[in-house]
Image 1 (cartoon, rainbow, N blue to C red):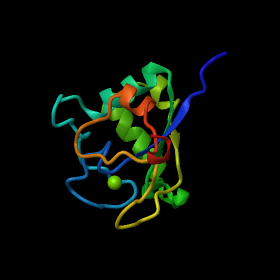
Image 2: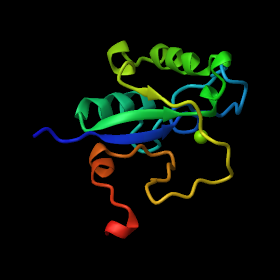
Image 3: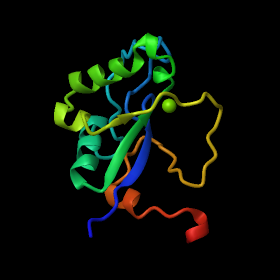
Length: 132
Ligand SMILES: [Mg+2]
């Protein structure tokens, strides 16, 4: 039996998009991809690598998608393509309508992003505290 794919939610601004310019509107994505502070790999390479493992379904979430009339989801897709993600990988990514604004996300199924992309094996083997 085929292994069931794990659904991974990834924040766009600050994890994929460098976001050093801060919020400039839904469609304005001015900065480069995040670069892993240890390996030098960029977010596009990381996303491609995650998809190539075949273990995950990637969902990208962002407040950019919350109002469809503002075109934020299309802008994220264009940005990913412009930064080198191939169409065949882009097609496999699900774009969520929003990420609720908050000071902090508290979640038992969460890895805190600190500038170093997570290894596919680390993601695949993640366990919430109550399963340890
Ligand atoms: Mg963010």
